[in-house]
Image (cartoon, rainbow, N blue to C red; front, side, top):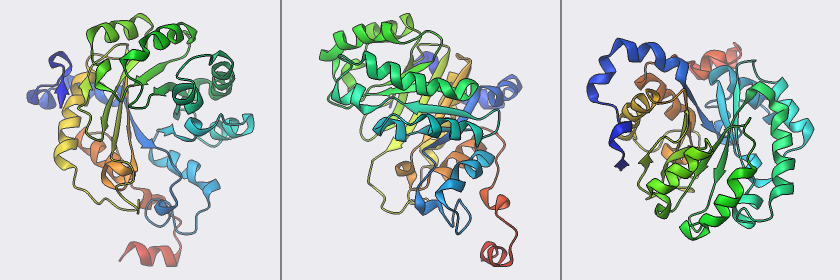
Length: 291
């Protein structure tokens, strides 16, 4: 793991009373997506329909990273539905469409960017950062594309950039992001060494792992205890430097993201809500809970 020393927590920080006082107000922890069908019967109550997923999810976690926006710009009705079916303090972070980041590689994307951002504004105060995720093939040779694109981002919205090529790990790139108040996305993705850096007043962390490693997503299948303990210390250190840190876990990190998020919440001393405590109190479900 590549760790920039100034952003790393010391082990003694966990016992610092001032740290535990402000951590809950700075950290938003959630899952990358909320709709895997394998969650039904483990996270969601048995028999739940997809329409019921988001309101239930929002009772357990206070934020989600929306993956569907990566594949297509959502309709107005869809975005408004997200807003109306979640509590007032819920936060959505959304991935920028791949047609902008992957297909166009940021070139000639002004119109599609404008349309996408206009949809995101419908979330109003529930909108968190927009994640601009690039493929591994988007290397430093596309830096001019990025320099031309960053001025197009409106100053009243927040953005985080996830690079998947080590060619971007450079002070000049960090300074460029600071110039436009864009957060460097810290990522634990495949074999890419994470770089812990802060380039704005918010931080963004994505724990992804290896895509397609697990076919079933309803239970934890890999012990990530050591990694999560390390990430908890890192989150504590980064939280000292920013106003807010957003952390999202992918199902493929350990097999079942909700459980991983709750393990991380416990490590950070954050309150947790057990999903089964929200299941309907029906005889059949009570029998399943006692097994």
